[in-house]
Length: 91
Image 1 (cartoon, rainbow, N blue to C red):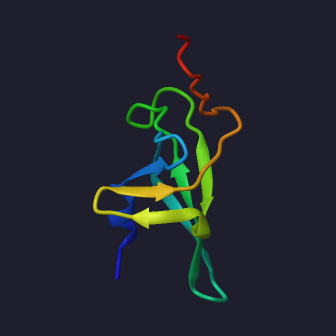
Image 2: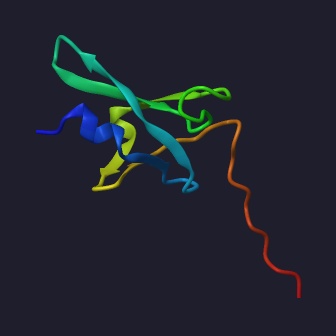
C-alpha cells in the first residue's frame, strides 16, 4: 500500500521531453470503483507557494508509465511546450 504523502515527494517527469512537470498535489478517486482516476500535478512555478503563477496538470492514471523511488514517469504533451526536432548537422 502507498500513501499519498509518498506520492507528493516524487517528481513527475514527462517521458516525451524529460521535463519536470512538478509534484503530485492531489488525486482524483472514483468513489464507485475505489480506483484512482488521475493525479493532479502542481507546477513548479511558485516559490514556497507564494510567488508566481502555478499551473496544474491533470494526468489520467493510464498515462502513468512508471512509479519509481524518486520520480513518476508520465506520458504528457503540453501544447504550450513542444520539444523541437534536432536537425542533421550541415557538412
